[in-house]
Length: 396
Image 1 (cartoon, one colour):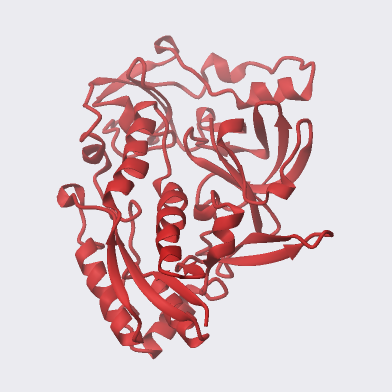
Image 2 (cartoon, rainbow, N blue to C red; image 1 turned 135 degrees about the vertical axis):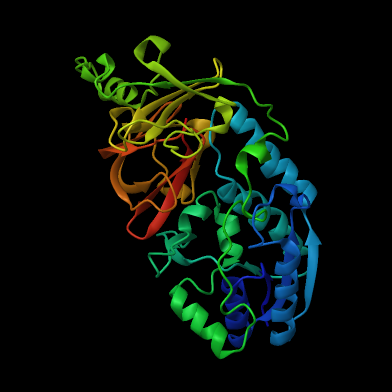
């Protein structure tokens, strides 16, 4: 009998994952990961870890499977929280959920499961796993979108490798959220109607500025509004000598100067803000809301523009450096000077967008057919062929 360790989070998705695996004949063990101790920054009672742990225990008892809690909070702080602080300090916006899956659930947790003699680990992610065999008989694992397109979570797993995927099981990937809740209700699971958790992976809803202020001190600075009619937006692109030169031009992050706009307010630290952000600026009196179009952490300035259609929010192309480029399917990795038409997204909820990958020495350009709003350094871009997520990278 195959043994599988399920990451029981105390939510309905992982509960049903464990239930389905038991029905399929697996020897199932439930493990709850405690990764956070500091409740001082949590602003909601939606997902306190103690309640989640109790719910996970109740589910395990209902299913008749062994259960234990493991404390990974030291590693979580080192690998996720400290990483977040470093990225915000650099003026980048990290995605802790992607890192949490790569560093915690499918690294430390996976190693722990293997030490328990497990063949697999399972989670309640809405995604699927496929297998393809090449002409030499070598098997490759595929990371496929979940059947429920409204809940597809393949993006959050975009940094997994072949070894991790080979050990992973996603029991609810072929189900919709409604079907998962119905199964939980039919089997009397306490999590059937439980609200989905939101916020940082394993931490919950937090006041992000207060969270960041634990390490990053407030620094008062100016908020600058750049008009949509600024001279820089009227400049015609130069003649390009090569495709690479064109991509480099369109991927360049804009850097503004005080002289391009007017000071409209004050903020308490440029490193607390991210491109595309609207809330927290506390500047009124404008016909349309202000959106952050650039954060200059070196000079502690925030540049903003009015309205979601402001040209400063949009870019066509982004770049991923070689060091931060990852192929879920290494056999599909592009060689220098190769290109590939894909569908891509730069954030979890974003509908997939047509784009072309261009590999150069030193990294990879992702060139979208249409300009994208709020391309943000530090976030992950992921690209797909059909239903399959084949690679990803950190936006430079």
